[in-house]
Image (tube, rainbow, N blue to C red; front, side):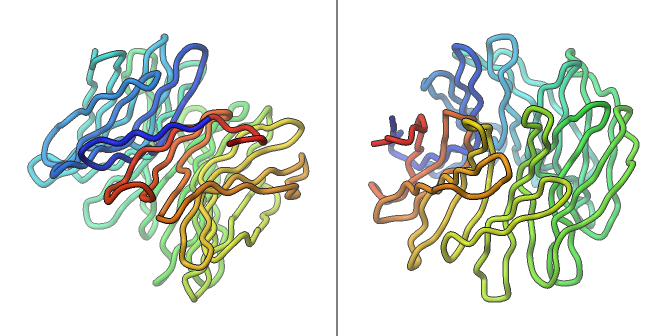
Length: 322
């Protein structure tokens, strides 16, 4: 099942979360001004705050949607959590002396984790734990060379955050481990000569798996998978990017992007429980198309194949997908 949202402007879906009777989708709408696009059960509205607004992350909370929104105000990037149903019900603002970027909010048993970056001179990765009343319990900010956190997961009494860190002119995938009180316990990197990213990490029934991409010197990249003991590289096309992973059958399914002969398509890669590839499906037409996130079975992304601007893609993945 596939839906395309087309309006007078451009729409991109960045993140989706489905639970019970709630399907929360976030992204951006661009019609001479970038606005955060917020949706619940395929009913959408925009949120305009400052000169630019967009949302990369959302959670389901108490039957409603909780989006992380980034906005630019007075030439400074700020973040907020926006609780909404049909309309905005509550906004919680967060401030810093530098620019802020929020890549993921994760609901836990006791509250919420936020992962992103803060910039004064260089970007520093940050992680914040909030209680259920959205009050800061602890926070930690790294001061390596230049780094981002893109995603966060919990396993047992530890918190795992992944992203990227700058090494010379290139980037390496960054892996960090924190205690439940927010103390940095361990940090290390994956990568060699060029650009490596870990874009998303998830606890899949006790097994932590992160996905991203590994780029070579020519600009091509392979899909990168890391299970916290070894890494795997899969070459599907000219440019492969794993953006999310979910449990699927007795194994897993990764969603992201691939490129064939310069044409960008969304990709679904099905793996067995040992992370061996079984089969792959792509979704795309004549233009640039991408799957930005999969919360199985729901996925979201965008397409440029049917208009001069981007249209939001929403679908339900099935192997007999039409």
